[in-house]
Length: 272
Image (tube, rainbow, N blue to C red; front, side, top):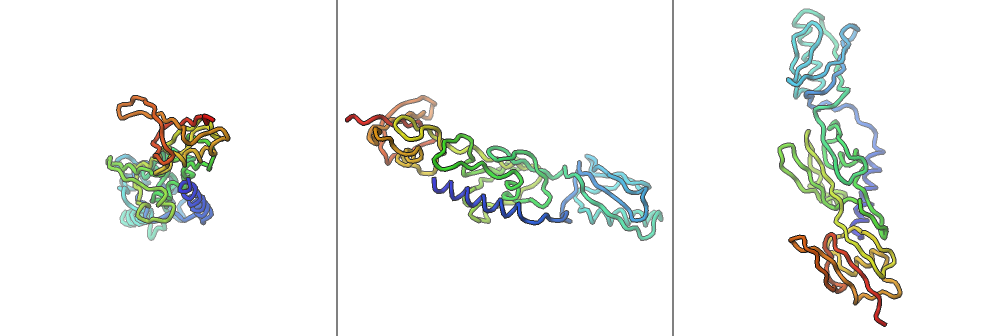
């Protein structure tokens, strides 16, 4: 339980810092792609102020010019391209062109699962796992001693556009491990699964569903449920579990035994 609380604390500190950071200017290294909307203007020529949507073939239309291929170019590169074409065509001498990306559609990544705001997010200045998690409001974090069913697990998966995947240790990520903060590309998906859980009932203070921690023992599971009642016995604990074929069985367990995902622990009364 302590590991989950520390990870949650680390995330709270990081998300606060990220949200408090000043907004960054539009990045010049953003690679324009199909679906992006460009706001284009030429100083002194109001009739050339347009919004141009990049086509599926990667081109835009601009007055007096043939279609312009812009896919993979930065906004400054597109400014240079338009200025050159206007000059070469003897349309405007020394034009001052401005290009802004006002709708990012080509470079989107998804954050799904147990986060506060799942959805698609543009890769503008946010191109690493922790940046995307910040945009999605961070993983859902539980509270110690409080039954819960929807908190995030401690390992996420980054699914690449090509189908390959990368495992992300969230605890290590929030603790500052740079190897876990990998780069995210357009079309990628970060999936944060629900934390493994167990059930505890019977003679415990707070029966319910709790997050399962790594290498959690039966004694620790009982502690998560508030501990035994005055009538509870740590020597009379029954476990219901499903085997590898999905068949449920019941057995007695000791306090030192390890708990597995979806285990059901039932604490019985003392005999005397």
